[in-house]
Structure formats: structure tokens, C-alpha cells
Image: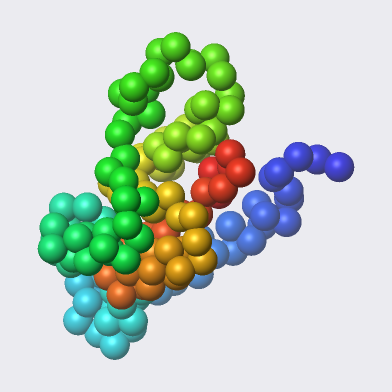
Length: 150
């Protein structure tokens, strides 16, 4: 068994690239600028990122905080937290940090970035509140538990 990448995955990716190359430029432009029904659907499913229009304001985050109590936290950079330097070699400490991920990107295709906020849920109702908030505001949602990133 090989680990991870297979010939089948490569062939599928090459086929998808060929299909995209055949799409008319006007169709791709309409999707990109949202001036078509297809573009509207894609934009509806697109997730909002910090500093973009549609990102929840402070009042909306306060509503979530009221639902989850003190379990809504503002995430600090991984090594900026209190005690980070002392625990740098402790894999359990690093795995428990909300800003931690298990990967550092893939050949420049993407860069991992910590979430702005995290909910340290302790009850099912807090998980439901966080998931509903992410759905209503079209936010990306990352679930992290038991020291795993994804």
C-alpha cells in the first residue's frame, strides 16, 4: 500500500483540469462576479472570512457568547499564549491549543491560519449553538477534539 497519493487521484485531477479548460471564459467570469444563477449558488455556499463583508460584528459574537457562556474564546497565535515556550516540546500541550493544526500547508497551495474565535464546548447545546451560528453567518467551521486538528 502506498501512503496518500494514488494514480487514480492524479488522473481524476487531470480530467477535472481538462473540463475547466473547456468552459467558456464568459461563463467563468459570470460565476466569479456573481452575475449568473450559477454564480449566485456558488457565492451562497462560499464561506465568509475575517475582514470580508458579512463577517459577524461584535454584537453578533456577543449573542453567541451569551449562548455558550465563557466558552467562547478569542484565539491567540499558537506560540503567543501563556506558557507556550515552557511547553513547546509537549505534544499534548500543543495539541490542546485552539490555534494548533497538524499540517503547515501543502506546497504553497494553502496556509494554515488559526480561527479568530473558538468555542470550548462542554455540552451538546454549546456545540449546537456554535454550529448554528456558523451556518447562519456562513462561517467556516473546524471541529477539533481529542488533540486532533480535523
